[in-house]
Length: 289
Image (cartoon, rainbow, N blue to C red; front, side, top):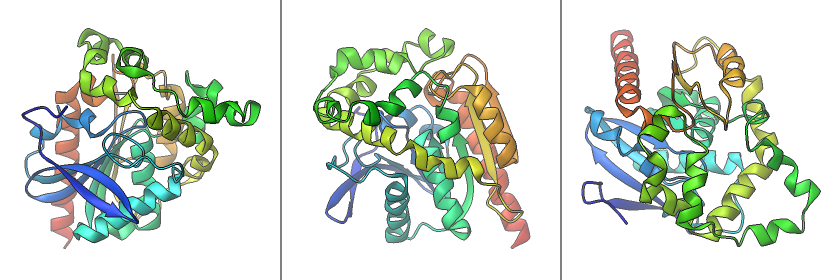
Protein backbone atom coordinates (compact mmCIF):
# COMPACT_ATOMS: atom_id res chain seq x y z
CA UNK A 1 0.00 0.00 0.00
CA UNK A 2 1.33 3.43 -0.90
CA UNK A 3 1.81 5.84 1.97
CA UNK A 4 -0.10 9.10 1.81
CA UNK A 5 3.13 11.11 1.77
CA UNK A 6 4.70 9.16 -1.10
CA UNK A 7 4.86 10.60 -4.61
CA UNK A 8 2.46 9.07 -7.11
CA UNK A 9 3.76 6.13 -9.11
CA UNK A 10 4.19 6.47 -12.86
CA UNK A 11 4.82 3.89 -15.57
CA UNK A 12 7.50 3.58 -18.25
CA UNK A 13 6.72 1.03 -20.94
CA UNK A 14 9.69 -0.93 -22.27
CA UNK A 15 9.12 -3.63 -24.87
CA UNK A 16 5.74 -4.50 -23.44
CA UNK A 17 6.92 -4.43 -19.83
CA UNK A 18 5.86 -1.90 -17.21
CA UNK A 19 8.64 -0.23 -15.22
CA UNK A 20 7.07 1.65 -12.34
CA UNK A 21 8.75 4.63 -10.70
CA UNK A 22 8.15 7.32 -8.10
CA UNK A 23 8.64 10.85 -9.44
CA UNK A 24 9.25 13.84 -7.19
CA UNK A 25 11.13 17.11 -6.88
CA UNK A 26 12.47 19.57 -9.42
CA UNK A 27 15.95 20.33 -10.69
CA UNK A 28 18.79 18.22 -12.04
CA UNK A 29 17.63 14.69 -13.00
CA UNK A 30 18.54 11.96 -10.52
CA UNK A 31 17.70 8.26 -11.00
CA UNK A 32 17.72 6.01 -7.91
CA UNK A 33 17.94 2.21 -8.16
CA UNK A 34 17.26 -0.20 -5.29
CA UNK A 35 18.80 -3.57 -4.38
CA UNK A 36 17.31 -6.93 -5.28
CA UNK A 37 14.44 -8.01 -3.06
CA UNK A 38 13.21 -4.49 -2.31
CA UNK A 39 11.71 -1.60 -4.29
CA UNK A 40 11.84 2.18 -4.64
CA UNK A 41 10.54 2.25 -1.04
CA UNK A 42 14.08 2.05 0.35
CA UNK A 43 14.64 5.70 -0.65
CA UNK A 44 11.56 7.08 1.16
CA UNK A 45 13.57 8.60 4.05
CA UNK A 46 16.24 10.08 1.77
CA UNK A 47 14.45 11.66 -1.18
CA UNK A 48 12.66 14.39 0.83
CA UNK A 49 16.11 15.65 1.84
CA UNK A 50 17.42 15.98 -1.71
CA UNK A 51 16.22 19.43 -2.73
CA UNK A 52 17.29 20.67 -6.12
CA UNK A 53 16.86 17.33 -7.86
CA UNK A 54 14.12 15.85 -9.99
CA UNK A 55 14.05 12.30 -8.64
CA UNK A 56 13.07 9.14 -10.46
CA UNK A 57 13.10 6.17 -8.05
CA UNK A 58 12.60 3.06 -10.16
CA UNK A 59 11.24 -0.36 -9.31
CA UNK A 60 13.66 -2.59 -11.18
CA UNK A 61 12.30 -5.28 -13.47
CA UNK A 62 10.94 -8.14 -11.35
CA UNK A 63 10.57 -6.08 -8.18
CA UNK A 64 8.10 -3.75 -6.53
CA UNK A 65 5.23 -2.83 -8.82
CA UNK A 66 7.16 -3.39 -12.07
CA UNK A 67 6.49 -6.30 -14.41
CA UNK A 68 7.77 -9.70 -13.35
CA UNK A 69 8.39 -11.75 -16.49
CA UNK A 70 9.79 -15.28 -16.56
CA UNK A 71 13.17 -14.08 -17.84
CA UNK A 72 15.26 -11.00 -18.57
CA UNK A 73 17.07 -10.41 -15.27
CA UNK A 74 20.62 -10.30 -16.58
CA UNK A 75 22.73 -7.28 -15.69
CA UNK A 76 22.92 -6.24 -19.33
CA UNK A 77 19.13 -6.11 -19.54
CA UNK A 78 18.82 -3.95 -16.42
CA UNK A 79 21.38 -1.61 -18.01
CA UNK A 80 19.40 -1.59 -21.27
CA UNK A 81 16.20 -0.68 -19.43
CA UNK A 82 17.96 2.13 -17.56
CA UNK A 83 19.32 3.44 -20.86
CA UNK A 84 15.90 3.31 -22.49
CA UNK A 85 14.39 5.14 -19.53
CA UNK A 86 17.04 7.88 -19.60
CA UNK A 87 16.62 8.31 -23.34
CA UNK A 88 12.82 8.30 -23.34
CA UNK A 89 12.62 11.00 -20.67
CA UNK A 90 15.59 12.98 -22.01
CA UNK A 91 17.49 12.85 -18.72
CA UNK A 92 21.09 12.65 -19.95
CA UNK A 93 23.45 13.62 -18.52
CA UNK A 94 21.96 12.19 -15.36
CA UNK A 95 22.96 11.66 -11.74
CA UNK A 96 22.73 8.06 -10.51
CA UNK A 97 22.36 6.65 -6.99
CA UNK A 98 22.08 2.92 -6.45
CA UNK A 99 22.26 0.19 -3.83
CA UNK A 100 23.67 -3.31 -4.47
CA UNK A 101 22.42 -4.43 -7.89
CA UNK A 102 21.18 -0.87 -8.36
CA UNK A 103 24.77 0.31 -7.94
CA UNK A 104 26.00 -2.40 -10.29
CA UNK A 105 23.47 -1.30 -12.89
CA UNK A 106 24.50 2.34 -12.45
CA UNK A 107 28.20 1.55 -12.80
CA UNK A 108 27.69 -0.72 -15.81
CA UNK A 109 25.56 1.96 -17.50
CA UNK A 110 28.29 4.56 -16.89
CA UNK A 111 30.90 2.18 -18.29
CA UNK A 112 28.94 1.93 -21.54
CA UNK A 113 27.79 5.56 -21.71
CA UNK A 114 30.11 7.70 -19.56
CA UNK A 115 29.12 10.99 -21.21
CA UNK A 116 25.50 10.45 -20.17
CA UNK A 117 26.34 10.33 -16.45
CA UNK A 118 27.20 13.43 -14.42
CA UNK A 119 28.19 11.62 -11.23
CA UNK A 120 27.08 8.63 -9.20
CA UNK A 121 26.80 7.41 -5.64
CA UNK A 122 27.38 3.67 -5.41
CA UNK A 123 26.13 2.08 -2.18
CA UNK A 124 27.20 -1.49 -1.36
CA UNK A 125 27.97 -2.35 -4.97
CA UNK A 126 27.14 -5.90 -6.02
CA UNK A 127 29.93 -7.69 -7.90
CA UNK A 128 30.99 -11.30 -8.16
CA UNK A 129 33.72 -10.63 -5.60
CA UNK A 130 31.70 -8.63 -3.06
CA UNK A 131 29.00 -11.31 -3.07
CA UNK A 132 31.41 -14.23 -2.72
CA UNK A 133 31.80 -14.15 1.08
CA UNK A 134 28.37 -12.84 2.10
CA UNK A 135 25.64 -14.75 3.89
CA UNK A 136 23.85 -15.58 0.63
CA UNK A 137 26.96 -16.76 -1.20
CA UNK A 138 26.10 -20.46 -0.62
CA UNK A 139 23.06 -19.97 -2.87
CA UNK A 140 25.29 -19.03 -5.80
CA UNK A 141 25.81 -22.63 -6.83
CA UNK A 142 22.17 -23.61 -6.38
CA UNK A 143 21.27 -23.50 -10.10
CA UNK A 144 24.11 -25.93 -10.83
CA UNK A 145 23.57 -28.24 -7.84
CA UNK A 146 19.79 -28.49 -7.99
CA UNK A 147 18.43 -27.26 -11.32
CA UNK A 148 15.11 -29.08 -10.83
CA UNK A 149 14.56 -27.18 -7.59
CA UNK A 150 14.62 -23.75 -9.21
CA UNK A 151 11.17 -23.87 -10.85
CA UNK A 152 9.66 -24.87 -7.50
CA UNK A 153 11.44 -22.16 -5.53
CA UNK A 154 10.47 -19.61 -8.15
CA UNK A 155 6.83 -20.15 -7.26
CA UNK A 156 7.33 -19.78 -3.51
CA UNK A 157 6.09 -16.60 -1.88
CA UNK A 158 7.76 -16.04 1.46
CA UNK A 159 4.97 -13.79 2.65
CA UNK A 160 5.31 -10.60 4.65
CA UNK A 161 5.92 -12.44 7.92
CA UNK A 162 8.89 -14.43 6.66
CA UNK A 163 9.85 -11.44 4.56
CA UNK A 164 10.57 -9.63 7.81
CA UNK A 165 13.45 -12.01 8.42
CA UNK A 166 14.73 -11.44 4.91
CA UNK A 167 14.88 -7.71 5.63
CA UNK A 168 16.34 -8.30 9.08
CA UNK A 169 19.25 -10.28 7.65
CA UNK A 170 20.30 -7.18 5.74
CA UNK A 171 20.47 -4.86 8.74
CA UNK A 172 23.23 -3.71 11.03
CA UNK A 173 22.85 -2.48 14.59
CA UNK A 174 21.30 0.84 13.59
CA UNK A 175 18.69 -0.82 11.41
CA UNK A 176 17.71 -3.26 14.11
CA UNK A 177 17.37 -0.43 16.62
CA UNK A 178 15.09 1.42 14.20
CA UNK A 179 13.16 -1.82 13.59
CA UNK A 180 13.42 -1.38 9.84
CA UNK A 181 12.49 -5.05 9.39
CA UNK A 182 8.97 -4.29 10.61
CA UNK A 183 8.15 -1.84 7.84
CA UNK A 184 5.24 -3.25 5.89
CA UNK A 185 6.29 -1.78 2.55
CA UNK A 186 9.61 -3.64 2.77
CA UNK A 187 8.27 -6.97 4.00
CA UNK A 188 5.53 -6.88 1.36
CA UNK A 189 8.16 -7.19 -1.36
CA UNK A 190 8.46 -10.89 -0.44
CA UNK A 191 4.75 -11.61 -0.74
CA UNK A 192 4.89 -12.79 -4.38
CA UNK A 193 6.52 -15.91 -5.76
CA UNK A 194 7.37 -13.98 -8.91
CA UNK A 195 9.79 -11.86 -6.89
CA UNK A 196 11.46 -15.04 -5.63
CA UNK A 197 11.95 -15.95 -9.28
CA UNK A 198 13.55 -12.58 -9.97
CA UNK A 199 15.94 -12.93 -7.03
CA UNK A 200 17.00 -16.41 -8.10
CA UNK A 201 17.53 -15.17 -11.64
CA UNK A 202 19.81 -12.42 -10.35
CA UNK A 203 21.80 -15.00 -8.38
CA UNK A 204 22.20 -17.07 -11.52
CA UNK A 205 23.65 -14.04 -13.28
CA UNK A 206 26.16 -13.09 -10.55
CA UNK A 207 29.19 -14.34 -12.54
CA UNK A 208 28.51 -11.65 -15.17
CA UNK A 209 29.01 -9.00 -12.47
CA UNK A 210 32.71 -9.90 -12.41
CA UNK A 211 33.27 -7.33 -15.16
CA UNK A 212 32.76 -4.67 -12.48
CA UNK A 213 35.55 -6.14 -10.34
CA UNK A 214 37.97 -5.71 -13.25
CA UNK A 215 36.97 -2.19 -14.21
CA UNK A 216 39.44 0.63 -13.55
CA UNK A 217 37.92 4.06 -14.26
CA UNK A 218 39.85 6.21 -16.75
CA UNK A 219 40.71 9.81 -15.77
CA UNK A 220 37.68 11.26 -17.56
CA UNK A 221 35.16 8.85 -16.02
CA UNK A 222 32.18 10.38 -14.16
CA UNK A 223 32.93 11.16 -10.48
CA UNK A 224 32.14 8.34 -8.06
CA UNK A 225 31.21 8.37 -4.38
CA UNK A 226 31.02 5.04 -2.56
CA UNK A 227 29.10 4.23 0.61
CA UNK A 228 29.37 0.94 2.49
CA UNK A 229 27.80 -0.37 5.69
CA UNK A 230 30.49 -1.75 7.96
CA UNK A 231 28.07 -4.36 9.32
CA UNK A 232 26.93 -5.50 5.88
CA UNK A 233 26.61 -9.29 5.94
CA UNK A 234 25.25 -9.54 2.40
CA UNK A 235 28.22 -7.79 0.76
CA UNK A 236 30.90 -7.67 3.49
CA UNK A 237 32.90 -4.48 3.87
CA UNK A 238 36.19 -6.39 3.62
CA UNK A 239 35.41 -7.27 0.01
CA UNK A 240 33.95 -3.82 -0.51
CA UNK A 241 37.30 -2.22 0.34
CA UNK A 242 38.99 -4.12 -2.48
CA UNK A 243 36.43 -2.84 -4.97
CA UNK A 244 36.66 0.72 -3.67
CA UNK A 245 40.44 0.66 -4.06
CA UNK A 246 39.99 -0.26 -7.72
CA UNK A 247 37.27 2.33 -8.37
CA UNK A 248 39.30 5.15 -6.75
CA UNK A 249 36.21 7.20 -5.81
CA UNK A 250 36.40 10.94 -5.25
CA UNK A 251 34.70 10.33 -1.91
CA UNK A 252 34.11 7.23 0.17
CA UNK A 253 32.11 6.68 3.36
CA UNK A 254 32.10 3.67 5.69
CA UNK A 255 29.08 3.76 7.97
CA UNK A 256 29.33 2.23 11.43
CA UNK A 257 26.36 0.24 12.64
CA UNK A 258 24.88 0.00 9.15
CA UNK A 259 24.34 -3.09 7.05
CA UNK A 260 22.99 -3.50 3.53
CA UNK A 261 20.33 -0.78 3.80
CA UNK A 262 22.11 2.34 5.13
CA UNK A 263 19.60 4.64 3.40
CA UNK A 264 17.05 3.29 5.90
CA UNK A 265 19.40 2.69 8.81
CA UNK A 266 21.06 6.13 8.76
CA UNK A 267 19.02 8.14 6.25
CA UNK A 268 20.11 11.61 7.35
CA UNK A 269 23.77 10.70 6.96
CA UNK A 270 23.24 9.08 3.56
CA UNK A 271 21.14 12.02 2.34
CA UNK A 272 23.86 14.46 3.42
CA UNK A 273 26.56 12.51 1.59
CA UNK A 274 24.47 12.25 -1.58
CA UNK A 275 23.47 15.91 -1.49
CA UNK A 276 26.99 17.19 -0.83
CA UNK A 277 28.70 14.94 -3.35
CA UNK A 278 26.28 15.47 -6.23
CA UNK A 279 26.17 19.17 -5.44
CA UNK A 280 29.95 19.47 -5.54
CA UNK A 281 30.11 17.44 -8.76
CA UNK A 282 27.54 19.72 -10.34
CA UNK A 283 29.41 22.84 -9.24
CA UNK A 284 32.65 21.49 -10.69
CA UNK A 285 30.87 20.74 -13.95
CA UNK A 286 29.53 24.30 -14.14
CA UNK A 287 32.97 25.82 -13.49
CA UNK A 288 34.50 23.72 -16.25
CA UNK A 289 31.78 24.46 -18.78
